[in-house]
Length: 310
Image 1: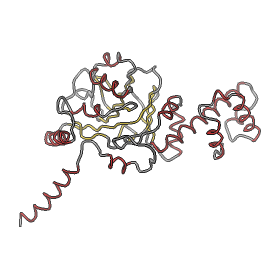
Image 2: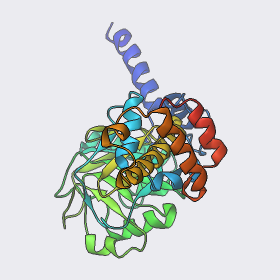
Image 3: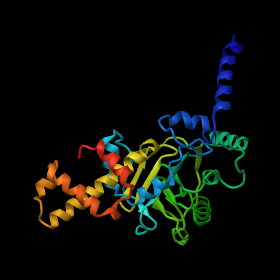
Image 4: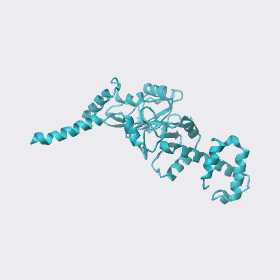
């Protein structure tokens, strides 16, 4: 009787063990991001275009966040960061996620063994595994549950490895060590919650490229990220083109409006409300006079404005 009861349990455990991975499979990532219809990285993550990421750098975080909220995405922003180079401008890229938890020896052994089966490096700590999967344009984003002392995910050695692979930086819901060394890596930047001189212990990596929580935000592998001194916003890949052109349009509209207010051509209430047909006509004429201000092609802008309600 006991054997009859144990057999199904052992079968379930075996199936779970065989299915459980440290890094999500391409099939899993495609299933997690069905709204994305474009190109994907070999690991299955959505691969947004370099052009859109470059355009995203120039946009205000507030405009991007506002567009996301208008599309129903209320939980994509996190603020209150310690930025290694706060004056270096914006960082954009494609997200690689990692999940860390407090150390539990039996689970850590399973993770280590599964990592071995997946061909992951067995020398050093598992905190190097997310770095090994980075490619050009990736941003390493990790939830290390705000652990400060003994929770430092990287120092300058791993920082150099990260930058050599991605030419980007990191976003950690936790801490790093050796900020002085990290700050000397030309081009590298980091958004972290704190800095501590201790080294990592009593914590473990549990998953790579899985949905994670970064403070107020939920983050998916393949999200586009915009990070600057004012905060970090994570953008679902399928919304990036909409977010970029809408934010670009808003910034053109604001620049025109500010200029006309300084010129005292319109009253503040006229600019700060639904525009009249005369103001819209003036704006279109202003666009014709200043083609150098357009971050997109004029055709792209004209197509966008056809559906714009102003």
